[in-house]
Amino acid sequence: MNSDKRVSCPVCNGAGAYLVKTQTEVDLYDVSPEPCPGCDGSGYVSKVRSDEIRGSIQRTDEDLMARHEKYEHEELPF
Image (cartoon, rainbow, N blue to C red; front, top):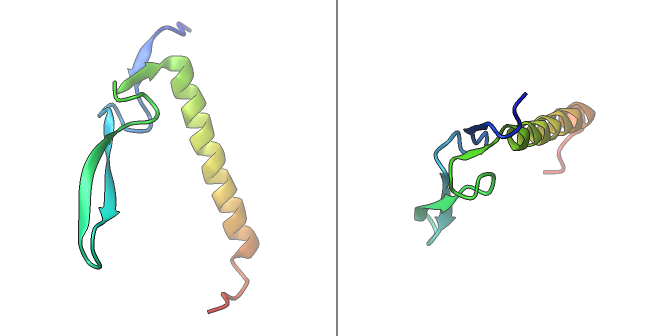
């Protein structure tokens, strides 16, 4: 495997940015583009970095599922 190969960023899917929604008033929002933290706005990362990001995303998803399974039978306090 060539570790210098550049691939699309898995965070922004190669866009280099993502939209950030901020609330300006009660029912009004402002949407603006921000540089992607995964690729620093370039849209591409090395293959090794892409694998690291994907692994981190997978671990986060697994953690969320484990928490959901642990607490799915508990009643919410409200």
